[in-house]
Image 1 (cartoon, rainbow over the protein chains, first blue to last red):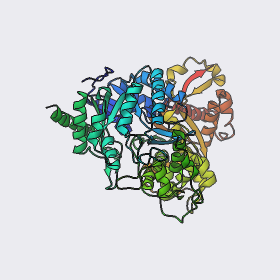
Image 2 (tube, rainbow over the protein chains, first blue to last red):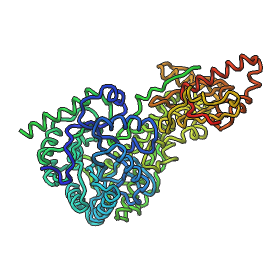
Image 3 (tube, one colour):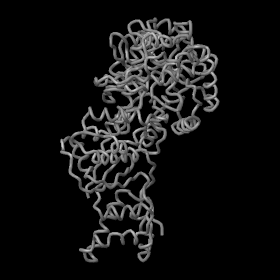
Length: 283
Length: 313
């Protein structure tokens, strides 16, 4: 099944990281595509653009943001969206993604991906905002499921969560007609932290809307898992990615590695492990 | 003229990973934000109400106890299979402070080295509380560090004025990283200026350039730390440095007092003749030929380094 938006399967990509700038420009490695952190190339007219232009001239690029704050009850930041759109056009990004979260409220920004209460009110709010952003961009927005460490209650008299994340995500995608970036590691992390079955999550995902998968390493503390993007991806996450990849009928896969980042060669080798696991699933 | 490239390989990303860091050092308990009275903000179960409550809890400094009990927290948050609601909330609080401390450490590695990791983290926590981010972008979050050093930094061993100088130098590097730049002026670009009109020529500077004067020799200290040395904090002695970007590379160049005077005047838009007039006294021990040679030497260095983008007559 190809995604309903007709967005291409770009293969196995890497997150573009500062420490690899020199190696990428000098060696032009055979990486299928790069994902850039949108905000690293916004509010700048200098050095970061020098490198992202070089990368975008050679590789397909996808934009991944951390500050749209789609779930916040503050107004959408129009200046941010304008700059996001301009960057999209500059690097010819194949699509733009951000997270199902909020990053701040009352004018303050925490720069963290804060969890949404999964309530009907929140759903209505986010659906409206996603539609607005998509109209502004003139393209589907891909929203990523975040790693979460808390769940909100359903409000007075409802001590459990009002809705599970996968239900919220599926309804959001349907009602806002948006795309999804399924972070398989985040499913795994949240499943452990909240005590649900990650495969139950996958069964609820509308895979015709999934245009990209994320995989990453994490840090297991026994009582909880932190989505640290450190180290290699564990096999359980790769297997989950394989299942998601199969359900999506083949989809772009990206490795995120953000702490103690090894050489470009080593990072790419880890990303290419995807082919083994996806191959197993495809076989 | 000493010229040094800034190694930017240590710069981190603003990424989507969760940061956890370590727990802040234990200090004598400080008063919680409230006095133990029920948190009325928990009564507001709207999306806005929940977000205001959650953000306040997350942004409360880690050195301050949260004015929340586990029972309070469970009015808004579910407990997990292995952690209580408050413990789960604490992951976000720690992540918030850790991310911003890391951001400031990225921008101020030499300041961190100078005052030590512990004092730096304490300074950052004051910074984070005083200047919370109001931007979707973290690139300019640290812009007020020199100001904070002047007013708040109290370390036993490192003078705050030196730290403020060091912070100003490191912040100039951040600004120059992000500033736009144009193609530099070349020697050929100078040739259209008639010899008899050089006095009235104005040089237009590269916008990715900052000229700074300090009360301490901070550029030498910065370079020494970058080379892996453990330099002593220098005594007061005026110094000046130009920080600029050429292509993707960031450079720092020492300036003497007269060089600083001339370059600052040129950047302020003064004609070349007027700018040179500012240093007549300081070059008084040179004869006319020596003065011309000295000034031409500066000028060649500045042009070849790309400090100017064009000359206007």
